[in-house]
Image (cartoon, rainbow, N blue to C red):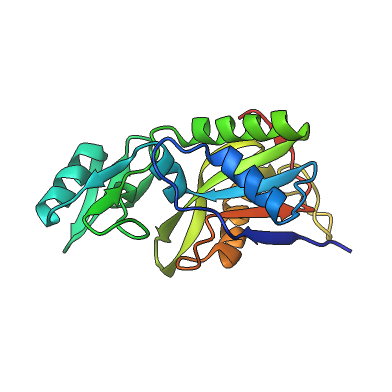
Length: 218
């Protein structure tokens, strides 16, 4: 029987620039007697990464927001009303280059982390060093989807985990060879974690256990 467990980590503080996020997570888990076992996966909301890394900007009006969007954009794809679809400096294509004014003080906005993969790697190394285990870390954010209503969480940064599972060359149950199937594991784990993290519950971190991921330095 296959079983997947996802736990939302409650009781974390309101993070600010310079906080040691990895240490705060470990402290919170210790207080709540939550064991982080070998091959656990931590999914961390982008917003707390942006906060501790000083990616908060003051916004006085819509003009300030538009200026930020253009400054952070590599390419403007489409505009409709107040929404701008653009390519970020990282290569992501999303609304308003990922700049968000939710879960932050009024009058401020959060930019995406400058290097989400590096952020994930830093947290992973700290936790592995402290607990002497292997873990995977995913930085997740909310993105819209072309031709679909609603948003989902996807991975914008990873460390320690292979992000894609390829079935190319394998056979299905009818002995047909699979030629193109590659599953976006990191995105699916991000979306699954969002079900316990939510948007208003103040749960920026989730732990996924019992998922057999492939270790990777990608």
